[in-house]
Length: 292
Image 1 (cartoon, one colour):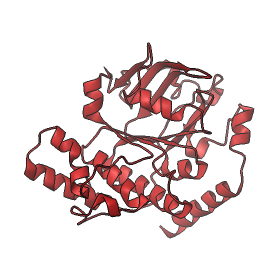
Image 2 (cartoon, one colour):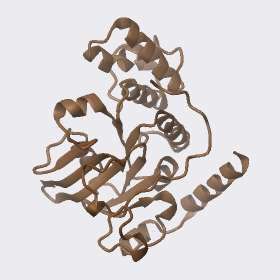
Image 3 (tube, helix red, strand yellow):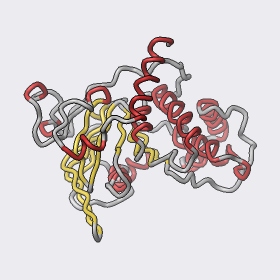
Image 4 (tube, one colour):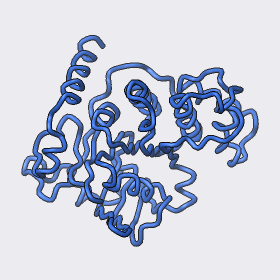
């Protein structure tokens, strides 16, 4: 069942992993993902040997994992492979010998459809009203009409659209349409949610607002999340940990609060060079802690 949102300061970042070729001695033996198997109970989803090749591009990720209840952002420039990796993990893209495990069980198409919900940059809403769209997946599961109605109402309230069931899709703004898309995923009570650049088509003010709201909504449900974005500010607002990608590879994956330490890759150092967005993030975080 969905839980009501309690607005509060973001929880302490959960322990996560480093995927650097060289791991500092202080971190050796602690969350080194290369020695963690698919059966590790801390991880909701684990991927191994994800490899995919297109003309001019190669995705190559040895291992990657999402901890239970964690929000992980895949961050990197356009063309770095973020969305392609998400599609592989969601079971929407075949990747040769890749193995993806959900709670230690090898992911199949049916298991993926039942337990993973995906929200894309474009909402892909159907003609009709809001309730029709949010309840689509429940109808595909042949649930009773009364249960569908109740769960749709609950999901819409969760995303701030209480009472919008009969509103036409045609009259929605971009932000409202993405709320409907998020509700359509959450109504299924998925174990994992994957969001692929869900806010990138919105204006800056709306992106900032929805990044905070989406983070609160997802945390309130305790769902494990993979969040793809090219925005550093968005990634640090939403996530517990961030995995930085370049040219089809994950260069580093660490907790938000630790990401600026132990950096050994020059490109990552340059990519995360402090600038106005980071100063604004620190200021906002400090203000939230003081007033929360």
